[in-house]
Length: 262
Image (cartoon, rainbow, N blue to C red; front, top):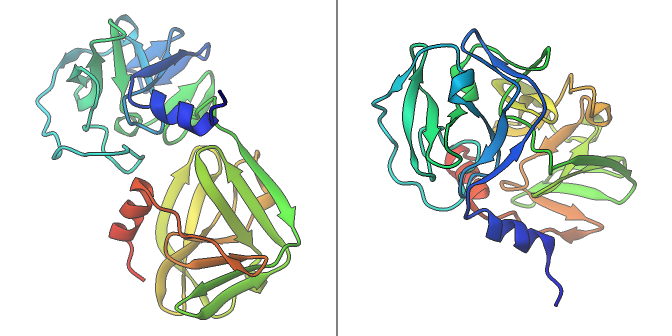
């Protein structure tokens, strides 16, 4: 009997998963470990670092943390670290309240909230955002297939020189040259960070706030998307080869609809 890989991964997401890594992990002056794990709590789609409590050089104490209301469904990167789906208890690390979560299993390990520390290093290189998933990859391919972006019947962009970005577990994104965007792009103050691509700059188009983004200086891994514009497929209509693609669904799409208005 054959099985679709995504179905296998989805089934496994209901359990706590971990993977040992050989990288030395340091966080400020509080953590220094060569025995770290990547940990995915049940329903979490991105991993966190977890280290043996013995490798935390700062004081670790139990923490009283206000836990957000129960969150159902997928725990995407926008869900706070304080929401946990595995047994354990929140801890304070060197005065950083709730910066860790003492896991019941695997025993002896403390999961780290990357955002609670000023700087985290893998070996001697600083990393930003959540850890990279070793089972994910990002591929970019140039395409001459016609790509058209519309909203309420209005064409926002059209190109035969787009890049298609394929990321594990994420629907395909389309990156278009700025000259193929119709209307007036205005830079936004909004920024976000992707561990795979780098810092994203956001753009408004003819009053439509933060409807698109670009990586003006992407990480060295993805020079192919430098300065290109991508639109939220969750908010606009994307046509490929003249056929309208369905808007993405699921928890992440719902979160974006709640956060942005067109």
